[in-house]
Length: 221
Image 1 (tube, rainbow, N blue to C red):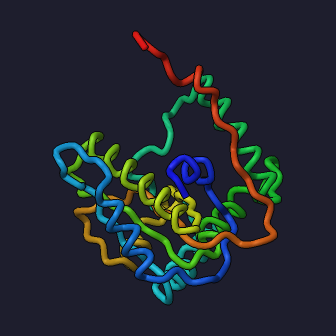
Image 2: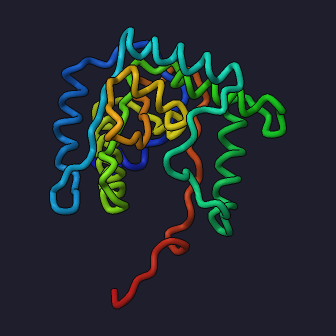
């Protein structure tokens, strides 16, 4: 699979098979992903790859919290700006409508937040979740570095025939995650990334993207 195909086929998959992901495959991907760029070569990310019984226990604890309406631990960073304006709010709304429809959840369902939380806390039945942390002393530049690292990871996973789904939701249960993985208070959870083989027979969802002319300006080219 060449890099263009990996980029085109990467999407947030929300239905995974129970086929295990071999550790040697994860090691190959995560070793290669360390070539991702980072300012000053700080490589500020720290990833915990969680599977097996530790992941099952994490899912049980998080799902129990979600189903009781637990509001979570409170985010340590905002997921979105307080006020989204066009065109960003339009893109957000369109993608949300597609996602809810694919998951069989009506947008106006009063139980939608709880249903979504329960689906997320099960990580869509995925066999592996990667939890990406950064040292609390890091700034916006290093958060950008972590994003480039995770994009590299997700593209390499596609090259291996796997899919993924980034889940910022895990930051709402960060204390539960930290207890399972053993992350100390000096680290802040950026997000989780569900990793596995896509479940067959499930409708595929690939959200639309803005036209290149909306996001790119050519100057002197």
